[in-house]
Length: 422
Image (cartoon, rainbow, N blue to C red; front, side, top):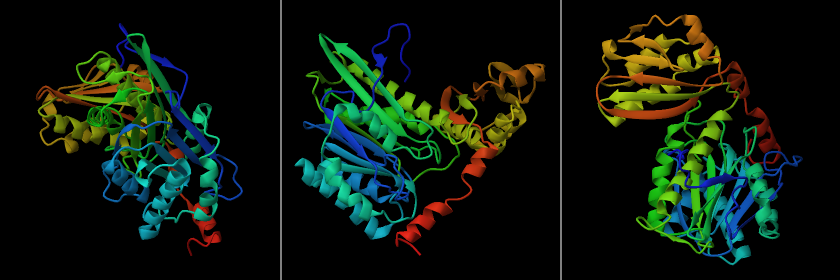
């Protein structure tokens, strides 16, 4: 998943979702969450020529209307436009929510000369509130005008919610004398847990790739990036990752052909970097922690143990306090794995041995404590029961996280004023 530093196949450059040729965008302020707000909250990304498309969505059994409609459209064929909003998730809104999602796609399609199925819709925000279409619908035709490649950053700004910053990345590489570009923007900061997370990730490339090959790459990339992150152990209703490839570079890519390995490496790099950005921008987090479990009898068990440790509130609280508490880690190992032998478990914290054979090492506690004061460190757990391994990227849990998530009353109060709820 990571770029080879010895012989890089691509170069990371400044840019975002419209870095690739043939992609344009626009974003507006509709006051979706609050009528008087002026921040951007409605966005559109559009390919000026036909695309092949791929995507993955939340595995939560409770799915937002936008997820249901977008996955339905993607099954029917390729998409050329993605309309996205922040401030309202359009989740758990019944038939009315489905009608709203379809209406958004229809208006955008008509404005751009597309079929409804060529438009995907993404929403993020508060769950359970009807979408304030009285403010959104009048602006959709305007959203489809004045599209420009330079407005990619506006899209990144319009889709963030509790994020503290926009998340953008762009890369390019050469195939012969032609350049292939990939650009992306995403959002995500809370309610983050595999499989998929509370996130929207939009990726555009000017390579020409078959639908089947693109979907295979996207599914593979998501497994090693967005499916490996967790902040709070909560899975959302709205998770979406969509990729469009329009062939504007003139480079046709396929497995086994020149440029394919570079494209795979570049696309997966984009996904992993965006996944890391989500965790590093987690709601009120102070630590970025990589949990690696090795020596497991099966990959499934390695995953269970890694997720168990990464999602443990006790473990995450100790990280927030700068406490190298390996006892909390091994307790999570014990209840997470089906086949764990205490006397075989080794644990390294930030590169230092903290536990060997299920018991404390002679590493000075002050040394361990000094290592976990850093804002980024690794936890390595060796079960010594096999050869399988699994890695999860996670964070600490802070008092500020709890305070930040205590209430969404203000949003419901606004919806009441809008006549959308009682």
